[in-house]
Image (cartoon, rainbow over all chains, first blue to last red; front, side, top):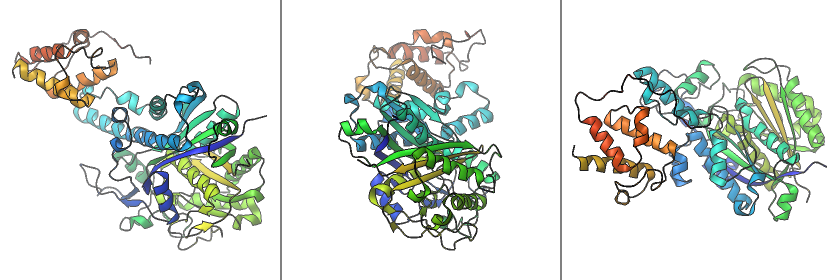
Length: 418
Length: 101
């Protein structure tokens, strides 16, 4: 029999709060964490079409984590360390009591160490001094720097991976962590999603792709508006989310508090286009169906969907269409919310942060609002999307995440039957 | 800059890097055995020194740079002749790296 997998710890760092309690309070209030980017020191924002982002302002790594560790890694990995530390403490796991080879780390990251990456590349090309490239450049930009440093911070010697599938990275990290435990390869997996690449080059790249919101530069908190008629692109965000996944048997043995069960997961590729989803929604629908099947759940059991919903014109409409295909008449009875309306699109962290919102919906019976859903777009209106917080018993939740490179993920989280 | 001032500068850089009190760092301290710098940390320290003193430290000079005093003496010596030292054109050994990959 396959092992049942549960969530026993949560940690988050986001534009609306550092720490789960601060995050959740702000989320339920529907507070936007999107603000104006004042400058990419030392040059101004004049040339950027979009000038807003979900930024974590005044972040000081040393306030949260060991400074020697923090110094050796980029901002996204510092975020991963902060979130993982909180989640592990929240779970009550004491590493000294664990078999370290049974504790793994799986991190989802889309962009990785771009702060140092951009700085070093710029300096090399400007000054042509190869000997001045920082000795830590390679370890920092190598995409598994976060999974490495999290393992080092906690002495976790089990499987250690990084999943990089752009915007769905940490939804896949959750799914792969679930598999890792199901298959008996680990008792515990510290599962993290992290990205921090609101950097001059990456931001310019997303601008050039015409993917970002540009009409709300003077009203940043209104820029991320999934499913709304006046949405005009996504808003970049940054942050990290961490979830401690654990076999139910292991959690029960140590009498841990169980938030929810990770019941099912599906991964697919649309094999279609680098950045555009198939407009008929078929592949997204298939992904959701496969995740439900993996969980042994029916559409009737899903009470909440944490939508991918980035606030792009096509993406939100395709997702809504796919939800209708899968859930039929029930589609309007399911509570739906878009975490990106609050924190922006945190790329590799999005699945983990949405996962935390889903777990908390199951655990607390509260569903956070979708900010700026002022004028429902008929092409993606679903009755369960709300501008205000909803109270509802959630038996099972579906987490959607789709990424560049034509990939999709869906994760089913459920109330754990003791 | 006197030898003493140079030593103080190196000690200061180390204190900042290691986040410890400068007074606890002595010239005789071995970078690895006494101060706990691993090989990567030594490389980072030398990178910082190269920047501070506008130097390039060739690979073949690394083996001698094992104590705080040795580093200070080395930098002092390199700074002595004018014009500013340049890295020798000579063959730098292709790699002395012991890193895994």
